[in-house]
Length: 253
Image (cartoon, rainbow, N blue to C red; front, top):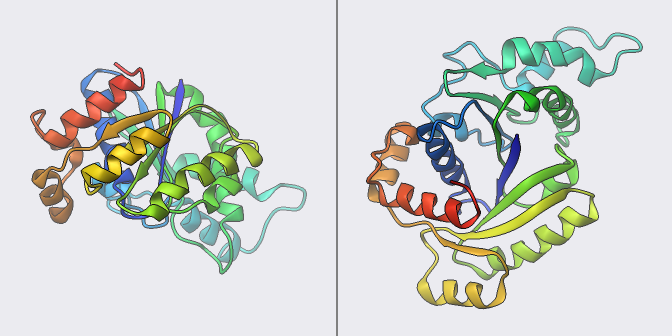
C-alpha cells in the first residue's frame, strides 16, 4: 500500500490531478483505491462522479455534529475519535467497485479541524491496509500539515500555479512537513496548466524533483463545469496523457 498526497495553493489544479491519478490506476487495474478528501471545499467526490448525500453518506464533520452536538456529548472514558470510528465506517465511507471515498467536510464548530482530523487519523490507521493506494487531496495552504492526518506518506505532489507565492509555497511546505514530523520518500513538483513557459523554466532550474506540467485540456474544463466525472474522460485527453507521463517520471507504471 502506498500513500500519495497532493497539495498546493488554491486553484492550481490539485484536485483534478488526484482524479487523473485515480483514473490511471483504475484503468491499469490497480485497485481498490481509497480517496481521502481533506479539502473543506469537498470537490473530489464531484470530480469522480459521486454525490455523497445521494449515496446516503456523510462527511466526518457532519458525523461529529450528529454524534456530539445533536447526540448529547461523549461517553465517559471513551475518546471522541474512538466513539465515532464505527460511525465513520458505517455512514461516512463510500464503497464503490473500484474506489472508496471519505471526506472531512467543513468545520462542524467554530475554530480548527482538530476533532474531525483526529477522527480521520484514527479511522485511516485501520482503513489504509485494505487498499493498493491511498490518494489524499489536501486543502490549499499549509495549515493541514500541522494537523498530521498521517505521519508518513510515500510521495507528495505539490501542484504549483503561475505566481511567486505558489513557487515559495514549495520550500515552506517541504520545511514544515519535516518540522512537524511528517515523513515522506519524495516531494515532487508539478506545474498546473496555467503556468507560463518562462516560469516553468525557472522552476526547472531551481527546484529538485520537478516532474513537468499538466497539459491544458478544454474537455477537462467542460467536465468540471458540467459536473461530469473525470474518470469518464477519453484516454486521448491531453491532460490525462500528461498526468500519466508525470506519474511515470515519479516511478509509477
